[in-house]
Length: 331
Image (cartoon, rainbow, N blue to C red; front, side, top):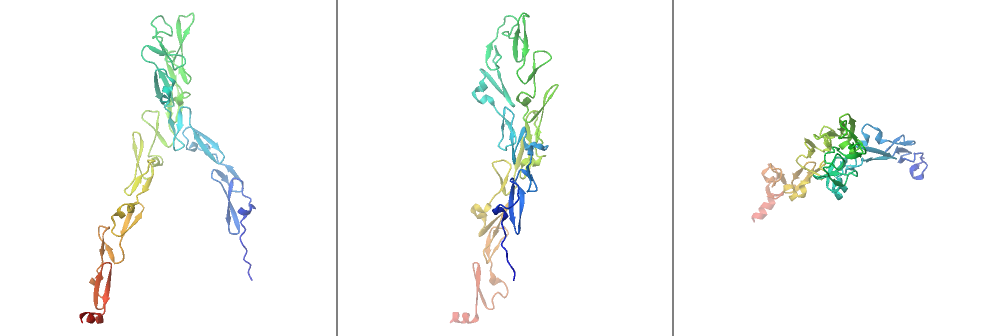
């Protein structure tokens, strides 16, 4: 006599030794422990996987923040996170209340700046404009020469120039050189300070645009994110799909077209959708013509030995009549 023992579900009973960050999977006579996504280990011991540690930076173009079992991307000031959750796009501050500028607001990559019309210069607060004067060498004079901030030098009868935060005063003591500390140096992704100013770079999925600031996707990396065909253009990649597929709103994914949904695909009888195409087929007793859509009745009576005596063809079928039936029909 054999004893059939029911399997014990250790996962349901809670008698397993899986880690708190693991999933318990019941099997016949045993169970498996599998670490949850975002964790690594043998299941009995699981530790958080730091996605931000790799050279890929978790796919984030700016900052990667590791959290238990996951991670998230964040952007520098002046940028916003794109819909893909990884790329960072410039925020146009001028769209909101003219950026707080009294006169002219100019958007830049990662920041913005206020400017004044002819006859005015920008005040120390970098937002309001002051009317210029032609008298003497002071900050009210239009020829003071400071690129950003003008300070009057008491007792010297002159002026000294200063720069806004994120800029450095040039050797001529008048101009201001941008640094990576201000608006990420005008770079969309990475910024490196050099003696001649910021040099922009891009995350490994992207290529530097001709403006040397913005980053565009390239077909050379991961096919530009395209499902099928990828083409490099001046503004980035352009994805396209083969016949039988349609490009989705994300501009990347190709979805099969179900041709059978419209006019039965042009098929006389049956339409079967396939990946990237479709097939027509016919009811029993019919054959598909060379146009692969039209169905034509098969005349079985034209074949030899279809019937012993008389053969009558019908659409999609045929009938054999015996000799007795023929005699009765004649009488």
